[in-house]
Image (tube, rainbow, N blue to C red; front, side, top):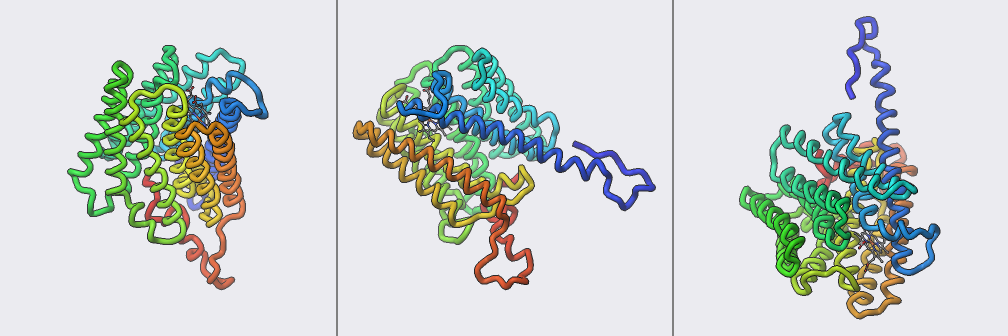
Amino acid sequence: MRSSTPAPQDAGRPARSTVTAAPRRTVGRLILLLAGGISLLAGLDGALLLLGLSAPVVSSRLADVHGPLMVFGFVGTVVVLERAVAIRRRWAFLAPALLGAGGLALLSPLPLPVGQLAFVAGSALLLPIYRVIWRRAPSTSTAVQALGALLGLMATVLWVGGVPTPRLIPAMSLYLVLTIAGERLELARISPSVDDRAEARLLGVSLAMVAGVVVALFWPPIGYPLLGIGMLALVAWLFRHDVATRLIRSRGLPRYMAACLLAGYGWLVVAGASWLILGPIFSGPAYDAVLHSIFLGFVVSMIMAHAPTILPAVLRRPLPYRPVMYGPAVLLHVSLLARILLGDAHGLAGLVEWGGVVNIVAVLSFVVVAVASVLLGMPRPPSAEPSAPRSTTTSTSASTTALDVPR
Ligand code: HEM
């Protein structure tokens, strides 16, 4: 959004359009975030139904669309909104708007293809967004993220075409995994261990995984073990090069983010090893285990890690780090251990149910902590004098952490 040039008599005064445009833009972004939030709540309701438990809203549609609603309606809207903010082009906001609207359409009585086609259109628009980023500064990081976007588009097109969700899990997973891995590379470039060869290795693994997704669609017994090897290679790269392995020894926000990141990488090992050892998995406890190792253990942990740096860029309001943020993160990982490594692995249905319910509590409690943290504003450091300069209180804010997401 560009503001007009002030007339000479207005020189020195801020143009009214620039004064009012910023809050308007923030309200627009907030509406898009709320659309993603509604998909999240509906997806959690669907999760309760899939667990065979009672839920606030009972509808078979909610259970049927739980997966795509979570991946594209919730995570997709939030991630793509952040990309749109990064490039600052008005048309780019159509992408998160379509993904958010697609989620809402799936919840409405509208025919299923309306929401599905909105997901296709929103995912397709992510590609020109990466084109803009690429033209500004070509990088391996953008290439890896664009490969993820391509897989997201592929998953939505196949879903409209009638391919059942279990067959789309590799494309849906890698859509988010490659998007996040590309962003992590951007940050890892400050590390001396990341040279051209390391970047080329990550690009090579990403390309191999895209090929693995295609092979898994047509020849699952070959494709899934390939994807397992690719996933393990990707995690090895992340553990080797991500700054999180060093920042886990720091304090405050960087340490919290590093802990969430490393725990998330650990869950990718579970998913990669399962694909490698078990091969194609389309139902049953192993299906639940692989799905939620990736989508809850990795993706939601990444959201918990990056929220204090991404949300301020989107909403222009700080989301200050508070140690209480560890609460939902620990709850998520402990309940996931119970659900997957005890419940799914040993056929203990009760633990799967309880683990699933506590997963939901963990996600919701993070939302509550994040909203409360935004509303409460910057905490005062314990050692600060009442008259301490404001800059000292912002030392853990979004713009100053070494783990900040570049944009
Ligand atoms: C927060 C707690 C969550 C719970 C309790 C939960 C529960 C479930 C259950 C019980 C299933 C059925 C598994 C099966 O058929 O064996 C399922 C499927 C699925 N979930 Fe979740 N889920 C949660 C969060 C998420 C999130 C955050 C995502 C994505 C970001 C996600 C993505 C999926 C996908 C893609 C499927 C496959 C759907 C299908 O086969 O139609 N879930 N979930």
